[in-house]
Length: 428
Ligand code: HAM
Image (cartoon, rainbow, N blue to C red):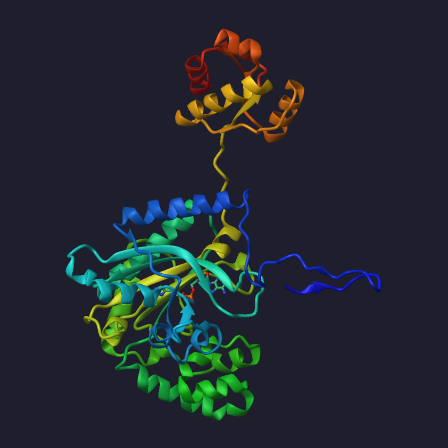
């Protein structure tokens, strides 16, 4: 731990209090309720489409991402949290989820089960990028993946599912961008055309893009530098290069989006930052977000499973950034009702313990604090906490076996056995 400099010469250095790592965040009570609501709505929505949760480890062998996410992607070349463990293995904190799902399918032969291969997941991802609004080093994704469906209609269906969820979250004013990045047949001629175009502007491109021009010119479109973006805007469009099969697939995608009534814009420069995409790519963006405007992004990756040495099964999916979606969502934490136990004396404390357990067992959120307070202080505290009711457990009440219940909003007071008071709470 670093030490804070002593203010006065000779004074002892105090250890600096610990702090969260830059680009990571605590999600505190008050905020976390929105996360819980979002997670609940996401589960409900995805399960309506017969998706099931698949949880994979937070770290994986580094080569999984090198091979899956792609050796020429920014994520792999610049952003991974990679470390060597005590056994000398290179491991990486997952920067995305897609390669992990593909690995899990192959490892457990989920393709042989006959169940629809539709999976969802939510959890933290790790990328070492420069933190700014909407871009963090530990961020959270909700990810969905579908396997074994070649038809472009399923790409449209998952875009529709994303909109269904965004609608429930109260996110409005989004735009849907779609593109086709072709396949292994039509991408090489396109890459060659890009390489040629980039070759003519090499001197004006940043060093990173110069390197990309050779290794994978498609990745020049991921550059965040304005000068490079302007140059790339004049590069040939993939839409002029895709083969017949990819063109038909793209036509099907647009037709299915029309059937579902989803407005979209074809964005020929939407190649997405990961190397695995084939045919469909899409993003849903929000102008309310500023520079990091992508709420979610995804597409098709028909070769990954085969490239991993597994069966030849195509995949398609998307991931949504939870932080970004929450920053534009209109979610209210659900109202919760609280019963506060005001206990007096040792006997009151003991009776209060048993009563609190009774009410909780009956589904009532109940708080008992073990401080010696007078009745007035108990009510002050209950008021401060916004409690809905106060249960009064004093000596008189115990002697009678009947307790007092005060409704804080109305001031109305009831008196009864614990069962009678439970009925009062349930009725109110
Ligand atoms: P991605 O575009 O890299 O795609 O990330 C998806 C979403 O995660 C972004 O749209 C954004 O909302 C969020 N996101 C990404 N990086 C950050 C960051 N540093 N801070 C905050 N939010 C971030 C994927 O990860 C693919 N695995 C999606 C996919 C699934 N494609 C097919 N299946």
